[in-house]
Figure 1 (tube, rainbow, N blue to C red):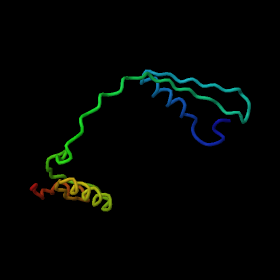
Figure 2 (tube, rainbow, N blue to C red):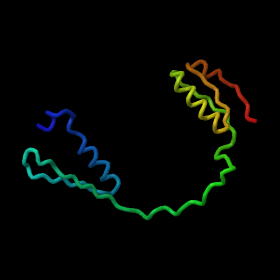
Figure 3 (cartoon, rainbow, N blue to C red):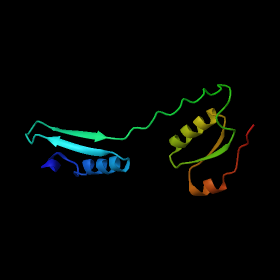
Figure 4 (cartoon, one colour):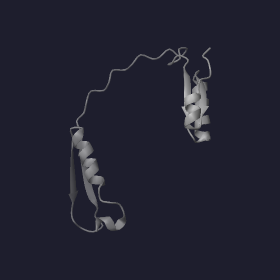
Length: 110
């Protein structure tokens, strides 16, 4: 009956496995009455909050200039990634097929 609304019926089992791997547990409660729904409780152990990191100097770039080959057969995706890398101060080059990726060796850092 649970599968009559779609799905494979694996979601709760997969979630339970993930929670247990993180040291937690899952409980399910239901009155067994149609239309009343169910309650699922997930308990996970807590850890102390990480110590605050000092603010980064705004004038320092997080990465040094790097040549980056963007290899993607989807030209729009490759161009978008290349523009983002360029904005971060890197030197991107693009290749849209395997042979072009192997042969690519262009661009210099300033």
